[in-house]
Image: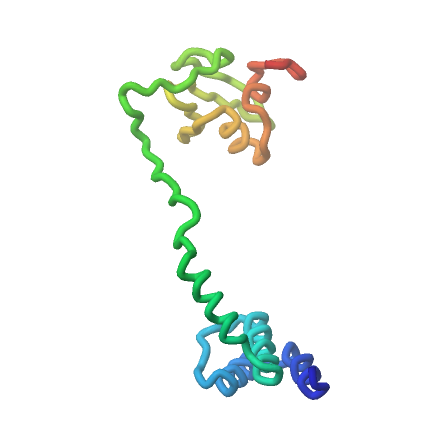
Length: 160
């Protein structure tokens, strides 16, 4: 790399974004919508090097085009839409440590009394419905802990 090119690239991070955008427009011949300084510095440095030392060979360009043509547009399926309705024949697994639906679990925590109602598919606490006791415990305490332990349904150290 020529010394003047190295010093020009080294000076890029010291430029303001407006100056980098102007330099980008000069080098590429078109304005950029980007205001990201790091991206602008990298892109300008790449272009300066490509102009000084030569761009990609035609063979490399053809290979890149072939790779793009063979690439799948999506590598994973989109996330499934959450539904609140359960299909009629699907039974959710039940946890034998939980009391029957309708039971009220009571726990004193930091000077207040919490009452959680066990529902068919979740738990109601302070006007919110949570999917698990751990979610209720996290909503109350602000940190993750075992909901079964928090509400006294298992003893400390008990293995399931």
